[in-house]
Image (cartoon, rainbow over all chains, first blue to last red; front, top):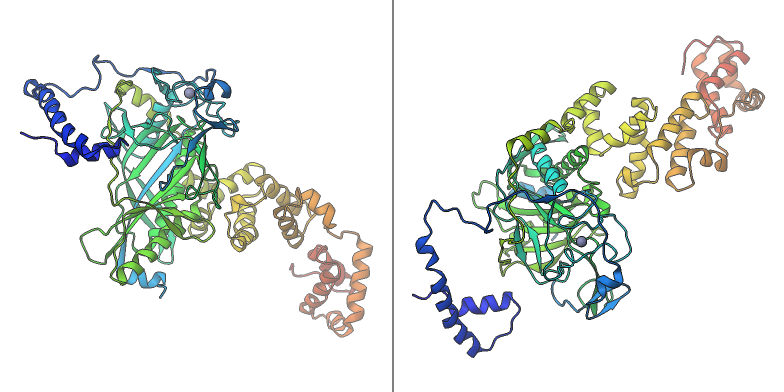
Length: 99
Length: 505
Ligand SMILES: [Zn+2]
């Protein structure tokens, strides 16, 4: 049973900003479907008594007090940046998107 | 053809939805210990966590959780016994991680309400704005677009990012849709944001400074034909950075939608940006292609599960609710209903209270803020709080009038001068030479001149026709450029003409 269509894969690629050829899409649509089917077996053992979980250990409320600690220097913060200007990260043109 | 607002409301019913983002005033960021101070040099308040370095692990700020719960309690929400953080994935350089940690299907507070009151020609009207959710997230960095004509992102050659703000705790408060406000939709939207801001301020959880962006409002507006069930397509207006703009944005969008609908065109579901100068909105990113953030639970953070004891402890610490405070101040200051509503509408309650706390008489303080100062604010199209006059200035002016150093007329000039940036009240008085002429010989000289100019009037007064004194007092006030105390002039004039001072002016 196919769970993932070729257009689903194309949409995921678009969301992830990955440019894919038609051949790659054809290939991945089949391959990812097989992977999903394998993982879907987990659903067979999941019963209503088991709450969905996002964390392997059942703990909660791990917090820190509201205390300021030292930050990086701007030099350190920017040291890995491919480009910088005036102590700011320089990024390529963002084009037709707005925030 | 441009429609009037009356045309719009005769045919359509507006439906509102409001999303307010509040930056919390914690000392440190949401998930790391970087400082949240405003205005630091670029990228001096960052660390591996808020820069999204591989392997860095976020830890939640406890105070941010408490502030969020307080907000929920003050808005009559249920506090979720179990809530989780999610990753909101998107590609935009304002978040270095390429995702924002937010809350998605399990927000910390749900199902509340806020009752707002507005003053209308039909009297005070109450509207209940239902709150859908209050959730925690982190703020984004600030971008600077370089190149292009306008500093806008379109046409920019590249952008520069400062991540000092990235990771500052942000709370988003989302209303359910608000139908039934009819023609009052713009006022209800404004009153909601104003009252929400008052609550947040009283809780002490945020600076709530709209002009600095620590309180930001997105206004969703749609129209439907009156009587229709189905909702129209909504637009979402961002960038609304003052209370006045909230009202203008809603009104402007209602008119824009109605114009489209009347022409048989459809409203596009999109983000629009409010333009402070024109009061209009311009199109931003279209939402026709539904945004798909691929939310999933944040694996690096464990759930937040506040127990009843923690919530009750916070509930006990809630301050006086602003609606109770309003009732208390109205009673203490003996303010009539209508004037109380005017004061709230002008957003003057805090500023009047500050002025009163500095020693001014409540009625006088209210009179200045809602009278002369409001008039000047309206003329310049700004809110009174944006003017360069402070509660301290007004308290000083009230004191000078009470002492007899200024007449009301002179005091108005002082107010004008302070607003015009001429300095403190004393500096304005000195530089403009505004001082009550209390020098009796100067007053007597002016009185003599007035009598000489109007001998017949003077004669009438000598013959006991006291009401005629008004004309001569007026002449003396004019002669002294309003710097005399009218009551004293009257006393001196009548005594000079041999008449008893029977009626006070
Ligand atoms: Zn940090």
